[in-house]
Length: 95
Image 1 (cartoon, rainbow, N blue to C red):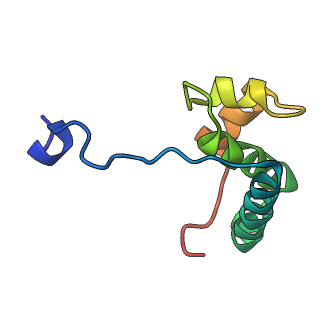
Image 2: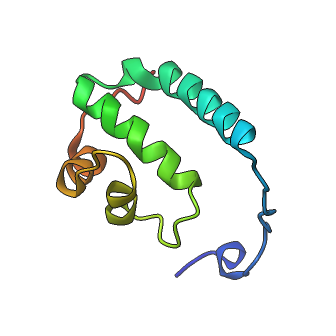
């Protein structure tokens, strides 16, 4: 059973963005800054690296935003390692 609000389709239309190379570079710099703000939430450097690879995948043009397509699309992506990161990596909710 879902709330009525979750049953309505297209509640929040997402606009299409046109990026040029400069815009993408700027966006990635902003994303890196966001990553740095959350880096101390992760106990291990491997978790921080997976987080950094996972974030751009959420903003990518991939049709499916699940772990496997993201891991396959990023440089040096590892599907199993990213799956373990999302499901098992300890991180601090308080930070």
